[in-house]
Image (tube, rainbow, N blue to C red; front, top):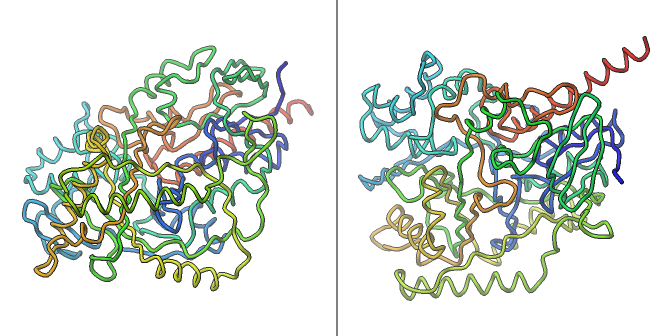
Length: 524
């Protein structure tokens, strides 16, 4: 026997959650189906790597002009603005310099990417690498473009397509600020989902969507069936590319082609914990050319959670007989294991950087509702700072995307850590301390997004050989029954959190408009 709901949202990332939040006043029975054991999608934290939750996915707010920024202000989040990047490391020259740097090649690279929106759409798409070569770019300009722009886009230079670069440049309207919150991004997820109560069902991967003009029948793995009037699909494009969800009848040919053309590559975060800082005071971010890891950053740990009140269970685990929160609660045994792993790794690297057993990453924790004590904000900030001082740990995050990330994914974890430490030693060494990173190293945690089931990558990027208008095709609804949202469907080629929310808002408005039209016709 099948269940029945007015609207079903497939995927509990920011697009799906925000759409459900906007639909809920009109459709009280809106249901969100999440394939994993937690809401949030690519917003996720790593537990156990540090005394605070470290962001495994997005970490910055890109631009201050968005509905996301407005929501964070509504939540009264503390926000700190940074210049990005504030340091450069030129690997071939082994030169470390503060931004803004007086460097002819660096200035040339910035000029080219700032003006790419003035280019004409090429009849046959070319890569950013070929475009730069056509502009007479030097090898250093190519290296800067790859480490700075392509890596930030989530790919490498030869994967970056000129057509979608032009669209992205013309339509980007969020601003150039890099903003860091004083709270974990899980607070944003909880804030969006707080009124959905038990309408988010986790561990519910969808296998099949049968649809016609009268509605849809959604089949889940395990046999559960749900009928609905409207279904909103917000899963990552990789899930559609893998055909993990079968559509009956099949999706239109143009949509299938767009799905295959728009790409999402991998991204890896190398989270490194140290006993003391060895970087300059006030250091935020460095972009590294001709290096193993193209970017590192250091951000202050979240001072407190803004979600002081007890939140309702926001995710029902439909794989269990009784409702429960998503994921296991982190226990003391897991924390002890993480500390042991850090001690072993530190001893291993101090004894011999070139030998030793594979460094096993600490177990990646599922999202959980944090147990927040009732403190005022100043007390929580003081407690966090005191805990950091007592435990004397400092976190630096390395970020690599695209084909470089795919190559690193093939390496042993121990090799990744060794190469990362070697790069940091070269970058920050002094006459007094030749191996500052290795000497201070405690442990590491590696997040490889290609290994995340039901996600399989980082975020979409301006893709080589994508067609102008592919993102619009991805966003098109099928009649009045099947709708689509998610960052891949953003017309401005914007993969950021605000873009995901904007597509959720757009899809919710489409559904509400259809419902309003149908209601108006029925009254006639």
